[in-house]
Image 1 (cartoon, helix red, strand yellow):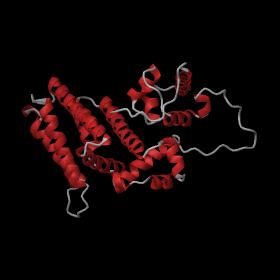
Image 2 (cartoon, helix red, strand yellow):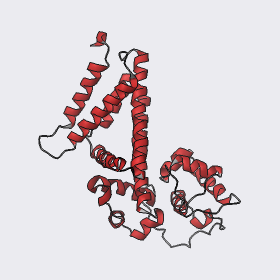
Image 3 (cartoon, rainbow, N blue to C red):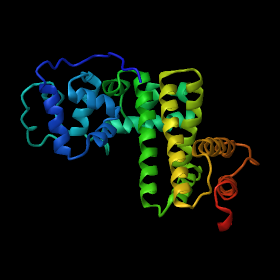
Length: 289
């Protein structure tokens, strides 16, 4: 993704970077997990910590929110004393305000589409003001990109957990198929976001290009599972890349039908059955049928 300049934080002495590292150390999480929490591209975090890129003011605000530290301290000011007794701190949603904003943005995209989401609607859903939303995400495009990235990260995390627990490549593929079948509200919301992303990709928008990159990763994951299955003997000898292309295309087409509002449209059970039939007819060795 192209990194737009934005409002950069001056850090010639490296003090801001050092304090961000302190925040990460206090939280006790990996850099990738920290990037997920502040809704930031992991590569941008890595470059910022390495000194080849400067943090933006919006990123510093989100880091302060997640790390429960003062923004001024992150920017080099002395640490402020504790609040006087009797003063209640402002309530912060679980996961921090930035994550709440991103989650509500994802929900609203699923309900209204990218072009139907306004910052005022996001603010109302979060019980805050548009100014507070802009405090964390200065531009609407930046917010939409953060929402898409969070959605993709959540999907990748769920896939990885299931793949690690599967007994073999066949189990891995069945897990991926189950995840892609829109049965739950969460799965349906995610698919609605994906479908809207296809339109963005066709227009070559920044968010659309992010989706293209993610989709290539998804298809590569499927191809790698198929390749492992061939090596393990649980799948017949096939071309992993071409099989992944066919299977992901089938998943996309069936999911689109499931999400159609017509009463006689394809249901999730039918979709799942069709995908299992593909596995049986195209991948299961003849001796196992």
